[in-house]
Image (cartoon, rainbow, N blue to C red; front, top):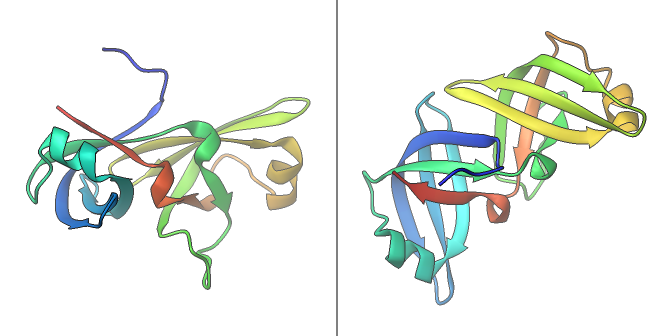
Length: 139
């Protein structure tokens, strides 16, 4: 199966915390960073997720936000530091490729946001991803 989701980071499940309907799944990315996914309990069971399971974390580029520093006091659990490696700014939107330890993410943000953040190739950023926007796939 091929997917249109560009952000596909390999990793290993470190923990699964089931609730009544949803579960949070901790993933250690191959680059050493930790990521949290909030997925349905049914998906956890169907995928057979348990500590040690190899997975790919999938995130649509429109669900990746950027900041110039880590953000305290925020409910977004996933904050991955990296550097801008490619930047395309259009009339309305910008596509920003960010290299993080263990992979690359693409964020699609507004042109205004890219300008306000002062983004350029080489600038340090933090990719922010809500746990509910992370999907998991098994190999």
